[in-house]
Length: 528
Image (cartoon, rainbow, N blue to C red; front, side):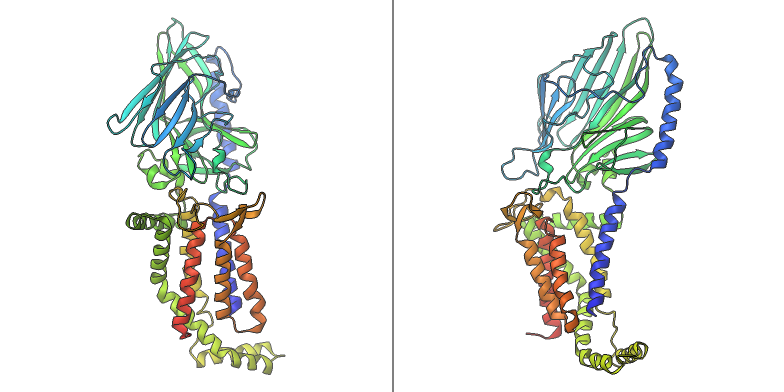
């Protein structure tokens, strides 16, 4: 029986790992090659119109330099625009940890900035129509416009339209040709981003577990790993591009389909949209419009933008179930005012919901314990005849009306909820900086009480040990076969090691669930 219980745990863990691997799959190589061929053909068709042929791949700007800064502040964030119209810094006012003024999404030390031009380099010197912009409930919308001139005499204007209620804003690029001769541009692009803030690193110093790039082509979202992507790529006819970390999301959507480029640089991925050919008639204007989102990787917040940003956060069954769990958790938080207590209350509600299944499991385990002496006699009696021993065991089960799988099948039925909890809490930015009580200062981090450099989990963590101890008590309550005592000891140690660096919010859920299961075991089996 204990072997089947262990198998249930390991199968569930395998499902969790497989789910992670599936949702983090890399960009399909075949589709990239097809898109590259399309892009090459389109570039070849337009090259005859270009006066100055630039490289097929957009020229990424050099390291950013000191320029005039234009602060833009709303009730939700504060960002700094450079004098070239790039986002130098972006900090969120919510979701802050203790000691933080802002949650830094785009820090000052990134090599390349979102919304920076590619292809033009530093040749355009802009001037802004205002020195700063402050939005609030009384002043909900506002604009910042930067105008500059290229060496070819083109007048370029970047207009930003901000609002106080969201994390997204519109960008309009206008290129004016004041000459009496048609002009063309090749491979002018806009950066989406080049990674995320160092403040998102874990206490152990590792990068966030969840970091990926996304490109939407023909309605299909292609995901690829930041760590695995090594080559420059250009993909044609994209709808939007995005970069996502554990808590944050950068999203760039052109109004009409265009190309995208992916540029690996110093263990970072630089993503942007590229306009292969822009033709400006004599005394004419060319315009490009885009939407940019820089904010929390939260489904409900992203959906409120009404631009399809939430598509970057969609997933399979477990992700969808996790969002539902997060909604209930948020409702409970609004009632009790503390995320830790909300997790505990939700755990109790889940346990009540699953009680019919878990009660069946506990009863089955209890009945199996009563049969252990008989099973031991059968093993001794039919030691040399496995087939006959199994036959007699099945007769014994039928006689006492026991399902030998009755203990592990209900346990497997409960695992989808745990996996959904895992998906919900591992990226729940609402838990970032959320205190609980005693030593638990941040439910989005391990509950480290003693920091040790380069130590797994960042140092000494209490909740994983308590969780492992509660698992050990459970195992001892259900294990009667002496041959399985080593397994009963190893399983809690194994899971303590696996979950040692997990967030305290997730471990709080599992610890409370284990305590409730121990109480249930004693109640159902009649132990005192």
